[in-house]
Length: 92
Image (cartoon, rainbow, N blue to C red; front, side):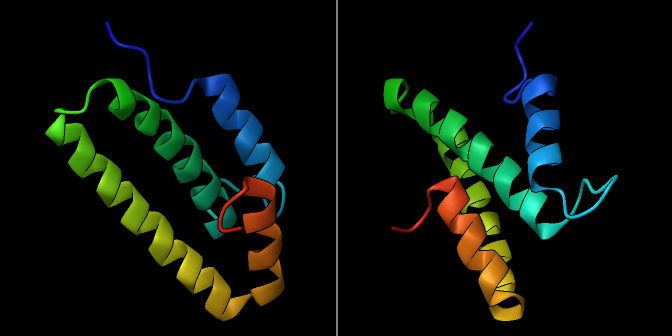
């Protein structure tokens, strides 16, 4: 049995940290933070499994999804975008 990419405790911690209001689990901020966590996890896997092309494709799809969400956030809420990328350590 395989372990999930993000453990439940880590997931709830991320959701509570980036939620905009009580009970928020699907806002753009939360989605970007969860995708970033998954991307970092898969990236570590890819370092030791360079020929895992199925995982590589999934990684590229996740990166593309995160980029679309980031573009949306940048277009609609510039200050929140800046705060989010700073807190996640994206784009120096």
